[in-house]
Image 1 (cartoon, rainbow, N blue to C red):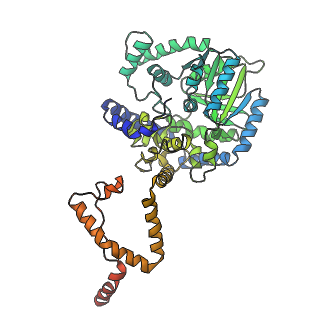
Image 2: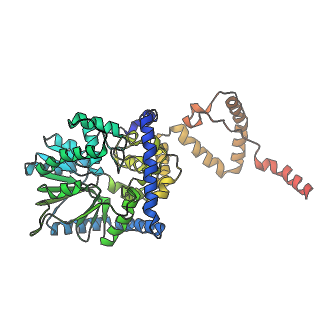
Length: 473
């Protein structure tokens, strides 16, 4: 998909002017928040469960190379094949090579954010291979030629009338706003594509190193069609998604569905270990697992930001973020949106391309409160802000802090410098009071703010204050 993260401000402005979208976003927030609360209300100790989930991710990332090696060994032992892709280009080349080697002409795909990240559809279509999204939301936006707007609900930005019109135009059916009829129309359109597909592609919600299994969660059953009907199944997974054992998998499953949709468990939870074995009735003839880095190793080595790799892609932070619920997912300009996207996108995309996104937050802390693995998103956003501000600072902006630090270390120099600045500060304060904003020439932040007037230092006022105190006592 086309990357437009550098246009967040202009895209958000357009979204704010779209009243239909504003109404839709408000309903999304209310619905998801209430469902999440209901999902966790039946848990005896939600905070302990979240802490356990966080510890699962901490342990896995602390031994990531070893777990990836173990995962590869177990997948191969189960009859599958494993590939390591350093970036999107390598991952797409692997997918295309597998497809061409087997003469694949048609592919069905389960909903997967990581395949959106690497734009695998575009790579396959360039080689004449048809790709069909089979998740209902992804199918809708594929027909519309749009990117997803939400991690969990790709088409949540569209209302029923828009979908009805789209289906009438693209599927050649009579116009109807009946939800059941629209769903049946999508099912009918996709059924033949499932039956004719040579290859199925999915992501992976996680992988269990000790068993060589991948885990897929869904509510529609389309992913099971993608992984059982075609001859070949390719799973693309970020390297941070591996966990050690079954117990760790269960812990993450307990928080994933509750945080995403408010369910105790998704309708379909599939644990896949290799291709179809002898005596089994369904499953692919070949199973291929592509482990994608694409910048994740660099994040792992960053002690201040590696916490974002704990993210399990539940979308809970989007549903409570006041910025997302006004700007919508498309304003973020790439696959990942909301608070998690404002941290992850700048780290995965070319340097500086997404520098606007960390500033797209009120820092209210709601994202941290709902995160199932307790990621401190406000802290990560502040860290990125500081980095970007430091990078774009010119010589004067870098010089002033250095001068202040030197003055602060020498009391005499500090008193002389503050005395010299006292009169200019009074002048700038007066100018601002009269409506002439002087500070805006130095920083956009200063626009609309009154320049502070420096008072007499406490050290020079203290003798009089002390004398007054002694007189009163």
